[in-house]
Length: 120
Image 1 (cartoon, rainbow, N blue to C red):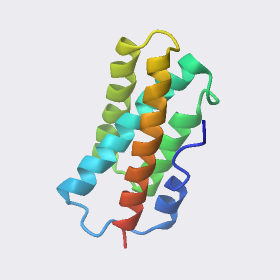
Image 2 (image 1 turned 180 degrees about the horizontal axis):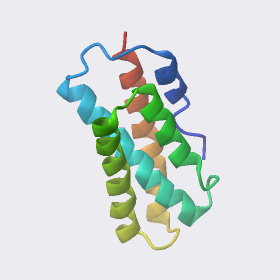
Image 3 (image 1 turned 60 degrees about the vertical axis):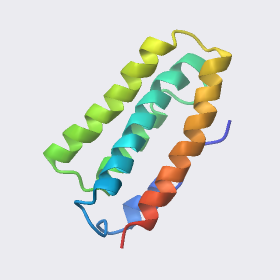
Image 4 (image 1 turned 90 degrees about the vertical axis):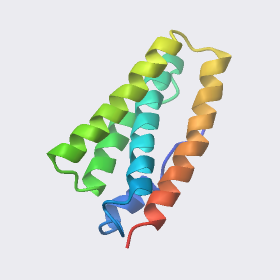
């Protein structure tokens, strides 16, 4: 497996989103938070990454967004939702879990690219 979301660092260097109220931007941002939460659980099952990799990515994302308390709460809820959903679905490292990791790697990278391109 390859490291995921190297582009999150680009978000940190970028300025505010073009339209902070953009529904698509927020939707993609929350989806990325969910993916990070799911990956946090799945990596624990499959020992693919250090235990804190995905939490650290989530912290980086919140810092990049300069999240206020409300936004931080939404992003944290998304992360926790992703974690809980996949905790219920997978209790061990299975072929299905590895397929999800691969799928999230691609989707997360695509979302990160989109989010970084839609900042000014």
